[in-house]
Image: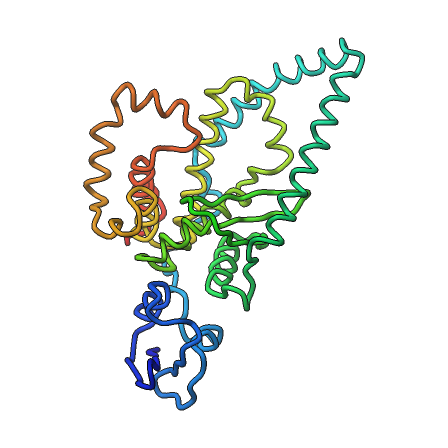
Length: 322
């Protein structure tokens, strides 16, 4: 499918679907400009043409992967050790509750109430300051979410896009409500020079937190093992690796997934000029150094260059060649 775009009374094109995507997100063509699919006769706003599916999302042609294989092999091990560490935490907590005649329990309950109030305020902020994606609101992002959830065999959470000039996104669960929040700093940076397939990796990564059950009550029980900071951080890093695997599976492209991470590393303007192979070699050159490894021990997330290398290995495991 190719599309003609009308600009100042002149018909430009036809443009391929990929070219249309880049021109939209670079700001060259506004969504309200007139467009017509090649072979068609009726001109309509480009936004309408998009909603009708003239510009499709990239087709995911990667091999089907057993969902059990999406989880990082070491995440379960890290979680088991965190459960073991939490046993001591639960014993100490119960002893303190008994010794304080329930005063500590009252304080804990008060803390939960304060946290619940904060979560309610957070949801209220999202409802009034962010945009929730839907079939008619940011339909391209909505399609990515739906396609990814279908691949993961999971219900779609609420997905919001919020203005914040930080390269980040996050998943959350508030009173049973599963949400993903994409910050504009990450979305804009990816789409400035990248494409929707790279955005699929970002969305898939955040969906991975819900798919892997990172917010489930059973896993929250292990939080009393956080006193053993190295185990807690180890589990956090392995959980992020799981989400990277899920993102790769949802994007269906090693190149797009790695480009999304490179974008987070050097920004949109330079991401397309970075040699991923050289960046991986840089990581392998320094990964064994003492301070590089020491720094990782106190990180909630794996090093970005390590994630590039990790995705290359996972792509071979999944049978994804491009």
